[in-house]
Amino acid sequence: MISNVAGFETYLTDYDRALLEGEEGPAAQMAMRILHRMLPVYGVDRFMDISAAHIDSTVYMGVATMEYAERLASLGAKVRVPSTLNVSGVDEHGWEEWEVPAEVAGNAIRQMKAYEAMGCIPTWTCAPYQTEHAPVFGQQIAAGESNVIGYYNSVIGARTERYPDLLDICAAITGRVPAAGLHLDEGRAGTALLRLKGVPRALQEDDAFYPVLGHLLGRKASDGIPVVEGMEVQPNLDQLKAICAGGASAGAIALFHLVGITPEAPTVNAAFKGRVPEQVMEIGMTELKEAYRELSTSKGQKLDLVVMGSPHFSITEFKALAPLVAGKKCHPDVEFLVTCSRAVRMIAEHVGLLGPIEAFGAKITVDTCPLTSPMLPARIKHLMTNSAKYAYYSPGLLNVAVTYGRLSDCVQSAVTGRIEREEGLWSEL
Amino acid sequence: MERIVKGKTIIEGEASGIALASTEPVSFWGGYDQVTGEIIDRRHPLSGQMAAGRILVLPYTRGSSTSTAILLESVRADVAPAGIITDRADVFLALASVVAGEMYESSFPMVAVDRGDFESIQSGDQIRIDASGQIHIQNDEH
Image (cartoon, rainbow over all chains, first blue to last red; front, side, top):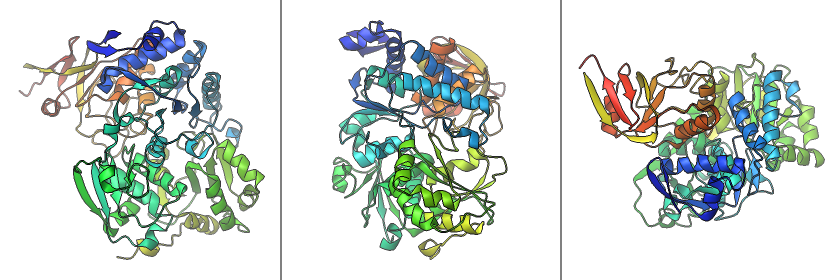
């Protein structure tokens, strides 16, 4: 059926039309009405099916985000495809240990309950790809949350556009998205070629390399699709996750290709789908060191908080952290916070990884993180992290000075109570 | 004198106000105060300016998926821009207007114009967006 929206012709299936006319209830009608109005903004005239969603609308930003969720839930909304939930505005069962205002916590929990009532899977994590609900290669998805979008597209080869909050849930309720952009073969070709040159293998084996590489992709490729040639090391999944988070913070990278590593880039030519790169750049130590420096804003050695887990910590990251802190004590003036999902915390606890970490003096927050929950005490002014995303957003959102360092540097600094970094290859010219 | 720029209507509607213009994109998450309507991205040229009730002229929004939610919050708090002019169809900003219409019957118009026209609009210009998507610009200096 041809329909008209804002002077633009669109082609709707019988199913789309039924939703739009309210035959599937008022919630599906509202979701389809919003999607339908957005079709011309996407510049396409039809929808396509998805088979999963990841909902970032869960983040509590104020009364309006809560009212939106409750409106949909009260109209009887049910998601039509398996839909994981991103972080919320509070740790539902642990917020009172921190400084979250009770009113915010109450509203954020109401918002959480509304999304759970719609039938979503209560994963409450920004690393849903490290749960049993990870999608598969080629799967069509609607995902919100920028690092998740990057990971699904780049590391798994699943297909999602960059969905804004509030629209991801409409896609989940209807099972439909505009047939645009990264959902389509032609939207997935690389735009910029970045050649690594003179980047020692030892640096590529360092955990600190991956967040920096992500940050640099965001800086250099902005909202394009960067293709990186010249990686000598096969990164693990946590390292790939770190690239996604860095690229989606400093830029709007929704898809990148690592030649010989990520699934749609067996060769440079395949990554560009035979097209000529719009841009070719060399990435050497100069560019990497500049990106490394950009991730820190602190001048001195003062330290109030070490935070890790953006995106949420995985079980393998807990396995790396536990032996580093075993038998040590966090300095009494320093808070040490790890953010992860409920499920990962439970596994870490059951396999004995949490014991040494809590004995060290670290705290675990689930469901959320300090960027989306007003949980930190005002005295925290100097923060250290191994995450490019925490490093990028903390100065603006939390009004703190930040230092970026690898996992072992973060632990060492927490013990001594002042920022210490093993600069290694990052300092040599 | 008044001149008229013809744009592409992204979200229909009428609005008038004084332009607040920059060629730098902004991320609303961490960049727009949803309680006061101030631009708070301290690296942005419009940092410290109040966008509430103005015609905000920005090429597009940058960064996080959460920008839409921030703009919706600002509509509810009555500190959103009166209208937005961009140089492309920005789904993050447009969605906020669509949902504000659904939730609060308070959508705001958005018009996309080509790059030359975009750069011709200056902060301080008196702007009126009419129902057909035409932008009427009054600038005392001309």
